[in-house]
Image 1 (cartoon, each protein chain N blue to C red):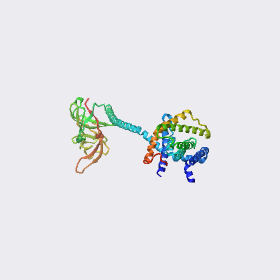
Image 2: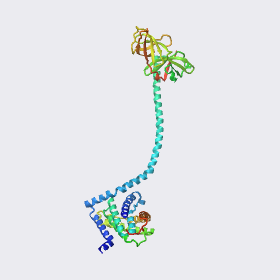
Image 3: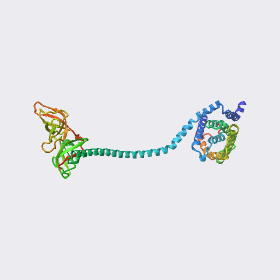
Image 4: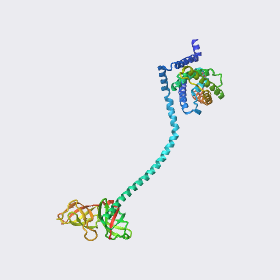
Length: 168
Length: 274
């Protein structure tokens, strides 16, 4: 039950941070994709099951509150959750550089996937520029260590005696 | 065995399920049911971030609002000071305006009567002797002498109010008709019946020595008779308010209301010799 409440609150807080962050924190005109960063972290820590589940629900929420292609975020965050989850225990996510590089690569993959989905499903084709493909992932990657540190504290406050890597 | 297999590949099944749902959303996103579902998500998800963002916005403007509040407070204090100053000025304006009007009346009297007069301001009036005497700012240096008649003007009315009791160089004391020591020979303008006006230290005058046969009614105008050489004849004094006759007394008595309100006196005219 405690785990369920934890994930529910994490889910709501994640959505809030995404909505408010894109309003109040847009450095250099680039809004970081917090839900993507959260999904990657939870996937790395908890594995693909948690990662893809959180990714899917966060994606559906993000789809619901934007006017973008409905289902695209859900699709991509589920995939990112699964792929990151597969990397669980194969990557030392506690190292900041590892976090930065991994988030950067996953962000690039995310934008490539978004471009593809738009190409396949959208009537009006959306072009994703080179700058978006570089700077947005870079912004996500640079923020990753700070965000991961906060999530780590957040999880420790809920489960102080458990090891973070404990399978749920 | 099946359960173990299912548990082992749960994440794969879930992945397939989630991707299928997402693909369904993508392919049928224009469908009404999917649109309704999207709207439902919007209404479920949006309120919390929206209220939180309102709180943050409020917090962001808190400092600004405090600053504005302080500025408004300072402005309020300044405006209050201005208001006080304006009120004082307004009061002064009304006072000067009234004074101007009274002085105009005095000037008008001088023009009409072609009488040499000295305008004077009342500078002292003792509450204990309110209806007895007051002090004016003109004296013998200005041609004022003892027993000179004193007139007051209010609007279009001018009336005798007393005489100079004592004139020093710069100031003079005016004995009012309402003083109990005052006595002026008067006459009724309509019937010509004579008598004497005496004060009783109140706002009203006593019209005494009215013979029983005299024709005097309420409302009659009483003017100075000019007997005695102090007051010129025909100066307005007041109007008869009531008449009383007592069987044991020979003379009748009348109460006269002064033509001028003695409470509103500010400036007076003193009649002097040419």
